[in-house]
View (cartoon, rainbow, N blue to C red):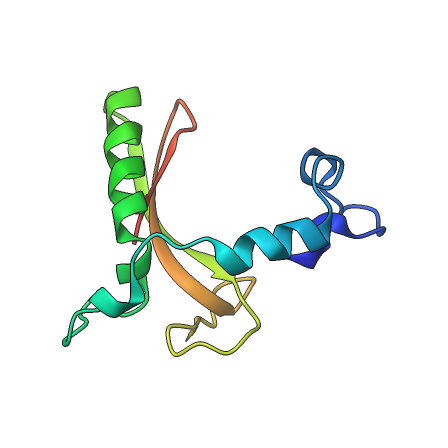
Length: 117
C-alpha cells in the first residue's frame, strides 16, 4: 500500500498521494469497518470476506446495472500480488506474480472488468 506514496518513478500514484497523506490513510483504515465483529458467524464459509461482503454485494449489483453483457467476453484467473501473511494467499507458478490472491475476472471488448471472488 505504501507504494502509492513512494518517491520512486512508476510507483507513486499522484491521484491518491496528492489528496491524502499515508498517515491519514492508515488512520482511516484503522477505524473503518463494514461488519460488526461480534456478529461473526460460528461457521465462517466465506473466511476472509464476511467482513466486507455487504459492500461487495452492493458494488456487484451496481456494476451489473452499469453494463450489458457483450457477445465477446473472456473469463480468466488473475493474481493480485500479496507478500504478507495470509492463509488465503496462493502460489501459481504460471503467473508473473506468483504469490497472492487468485480472483476471477470477466473482460469484454468494452474493457469492463467484473471481479468474481
